[in-house]
Length: 243
Image 1 (cartoon, one colour):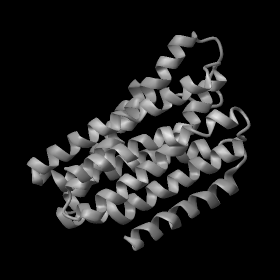
Image 2: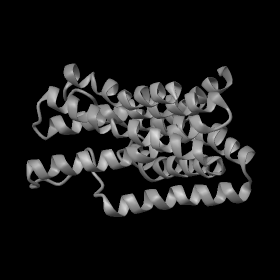
Image 3: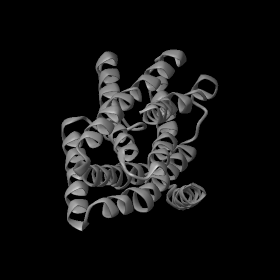
Image 4: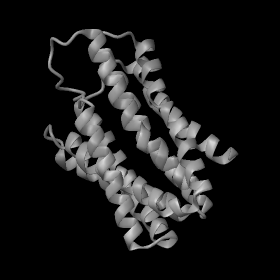
């Protein structure tokens, strides 16, 4: 219990950690570096899904449970995408009221973090203790650039640096609650563990292919983003092997 609590807090607060540079860099970050960060995050999450979550789901269950859980994760993310407006960090149309836009950003990012928190909690409930730490680390590494980009967007909307930093940090706090929820559900109902691990993998794969990769390849930085994606995969593989 202590381990999942610490892991969920660290992965959630990584959103705020990633937003810290916004207090000093403001608008100086280039679009190229933004795409590099997104692609690196995608590589990390891809390796975590394919080398940790999916093998663990197969070991704890079967190909059938993997398929059901994975598609359920994709389905939930699809529903979230259809019901929560997508916020384009660079190309959002002008003319929306400030308060409405800020609330849309906060709602979208907060709901986006729900399956990530569940992924951490479910991973800690698995029989392999290292899985929880690896997924918490992967989610934390993904949250850091996300926090930076959210804070950067808020600053572009004339929100103060400190306020943008606080908002970006709070969007990750929901992961603590959902992480504990995922942990308790799969701890009390052990048969849910393979489904939960597969759900986490499906949610992460959806985020990678639907959000992170397209966002990092839409502005002429495809080659450097591809290199960054591969480096992210290798970085996570190194961490998996190290554990």
